[in-house]
Image (cartoon, rainbow, N blue to C red; front, side, top):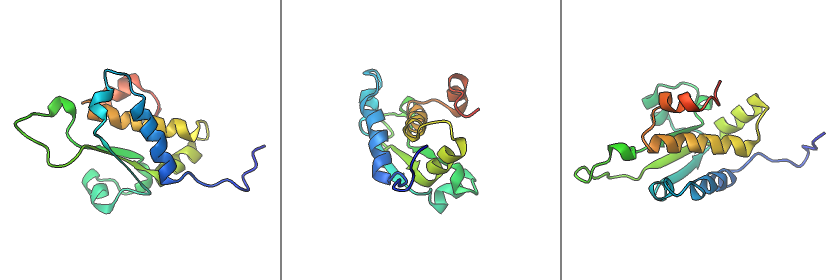
Length: 135
């Protein structure tokens, strides 16, 4: 039996370290395209983001890619903000507790890879065809 008396919830810094490791260890074909992505970890998505995505419950959003996928970038249309992967700590902790069948680091890794896939131009449908994680 696990002794939880001294356990604490993962911090934003700990989640960022896991996600940064995912980015740092990408295969060589992908690594150069992910180096400039800004990684942000917050407890929850802000109201504007929730409204834009038409999501009412912030615990439903574990992460999001905010940027222009590399398949859509054009030198003639420079981007004025950096590509950003947002990870939401409280939603990930909630999902991890609810699932009860994965290590927390595995969940953070999965969410990070999912958002990286959007950066590489994959849709949710594309990702779902090869990744059955959410079933």
